[in-house]
Image 1 (tube, rainbow, N blue to C red):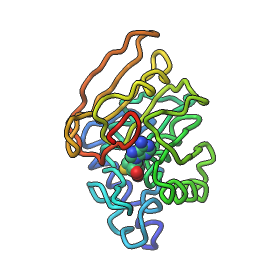
Image 2: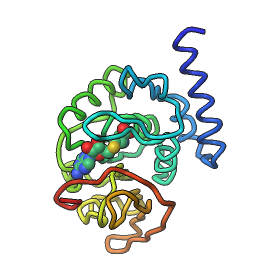
Image 3: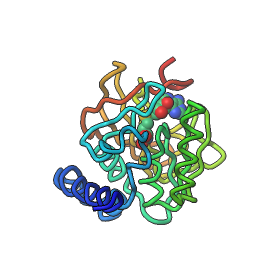
Length: 218
Ligand code: SAH
């Protein structure tokens, strides 16, 4: 088997066992997870672990999320083909690529310049022309591009940043890990019901790196 077929079959195995097997059923999400080559978003020393059932280090003390968590968050966002999404914590760019395979456009913010740069490069090399990456503090959102149909936050916040709630379109969802501890959070889905009303549901317990910034951890 050549390398490409090998990764394709590992990806198919991952989707069957870790994604569909655990209850993810939204066709757009399953299809995106089946297409995005996770091996391109990890370092060359970790390509053999690219389809493992967990997070992996990407340098600078950060991680690429577990595939199942990326799929769970994408499903909770409930995006469709014409939607515009905001992704906070670009990291490797993997989750941005998954969202870009579902939505029309993705704006992604990363606070570490080296990660923002390498993610932007991989996304461009892999043909994700509908993702824009910028380096900055994602807790403030991206007001120039708001409102968003979905906002995905890949780092744990002490509280839900008000800026992100305000940049959500009515009917849109914000998916974010929230918790008072640095290490364990509860994954919340906040739906904007009207200009002033929001509904929060809790999805599960998760472990993310801390969201550092003006409306996150200091
Ligand atoms: N979605 C990423 C996961 C990366 S881990 C992936 O698929 O690889 C979370 C990332 O959030 C880290 O890279 C971290 O540097 C970044 N981060 C933390 N606080 C942030 C903030 N305020 N704004 C933007 N990025 C932030």
